[in-house]
Length: 198
Image 1 (cartoon, rainbow, N blue to C red):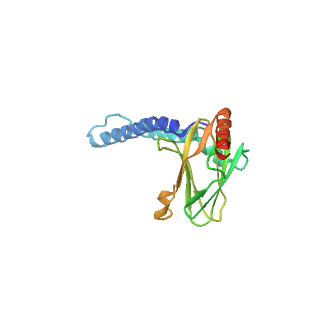
Image 2 (cartoon, rainbow, N blue to C red):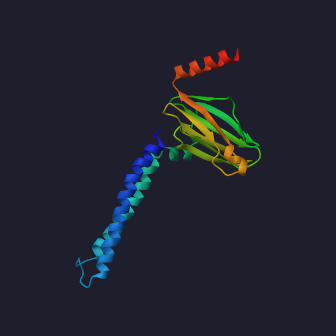
Image 3 (spheres, helix red, strand yellow):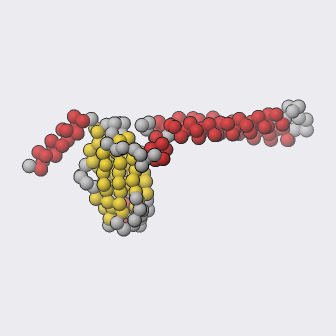
């Protein structure tokens, strides 16, 4: 699965170009109506040509991003996705109740997070070490709350609430709670944990 940071960097360039095209269209139109003589003898053709071009590019961007942005396809078909691993997480009294102190995920695994709120509406977001967000979702009490994600990069992620749930909600996070690593690294982490427990 492509990283959202890669998608956003490409989309910045695409939307800058798209914005320049729109501004040039407005400039051409404004110049045409402010001059006493027509710049182009048939201004209707460029006008409707620009409109058609902008519609084509705009629709094309949305069709392209449907297949490129990582979370769209997974979210639309998440009921059919077979997860390699599932984590059941509940949230109550401004605390994440994780199934383990560290959620270990093998690089390349498809993971389903099942979340349950026992009191308020919270958020559930995974954040990279540099503070940027990988994904987030809202966790509503009494509703099915799940998200599916494929982890293709080795990294540590912090879980943080992304929804305002009162003043205590700002402290609702667990640093380095999700670890994505190779199979050998996970085996080593598990053996270290067992050594500490004994």
